[in-house]
Length: 239
Length: 239
Image (cartoon, rainbow over all chains, first blue to last red; front, side):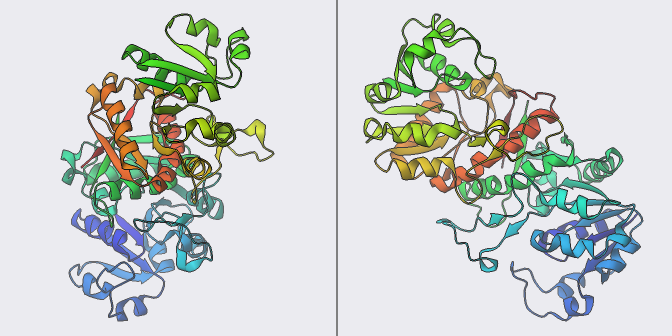
């Protein structure tokens, strides 16, 4: 299956590497492929330069967002940061029409992008926008009415999403939400191929609100466990 | 130990019954004890009239919020609904001074209390206020600087908080957050007496934001499990 991943951050790299390992034909989209490959410094999160990382994955093609979205057979994963996702995806709405888009972005508004400070004595807990009465996933779905948006992956670090069995023998829960049953099934099938056995369908895309707002709880649990930067844990819904 | 519970709703009743079962001297606070006892109709959530419920617990005393808070030795549980909690607690700040207050309220703004409608195709997911950059627990702590506020209990139904072993043999996680280590230890000791074995201290009270915002995820999981009104489940942090 020819899949596209939009984004080159740490989460997108984890997804890209896993999909390549599973034998998929993987296309990665970025805003400006030449600029991405020319970068010699680590990114804002401390990941090594993308070109350096990509050298270990010779089968992966790096294209523009539009070309990557167009190249995908049917399934595209959104790894564009939440603050820029709606604008970047709207620009490639035609290329995403008729396809399934799995979105795992958190709509963080980083402190350096706003005048609104907030107290975070133990680290970073950025503000969310949208929040509570709307979600990024719903915004994306409204902006791309011909695309089937599924919210998933967002309740964990992507390194643990692609390797669920590395935590507690895999006995934890992944969530999906969306308004299109067939698209949700594609996400569930992909997650199953990653090794997930407990996947809970929360219902329609409005449930993305809770999934995105869980970001603060995820951060707090990470800090509580002494894992402030990218927690290596999952959550299990115990029935 | 003489404990006070402020509130007479379903959650407060679960806490009250459990504390009485554990042998504590339990005082319940309500806005107007005579009016509470005179009510002959079920409450807004469908719970039977409080006087009828209380008849099964002859050792429990019903007083005003102020008298109940004053009567507690040291530990008070806030079961006042989130929308009214700050005002009601501020009015009894003197009686709560020097004591520990465990708060489990969710700051829901119900649709009938606002002009702001929101789409909830499968049920009720009310708006939260405060949210994201503040929390109800922090508001309460600011309003009651001489009280030690601990946020806990809020990530589950209170019927499951007081009976953790009824779910998955008790192998799920309870969270505490607060700025006072001794008060958090009191909450942890109380939870241990309820049967909790996995209690995670998230850190300072700012973590109450994530705990309160988890309410939407809790609702969504409940709907996903087909338990829309008071879910019988817990969440386990899988390390």
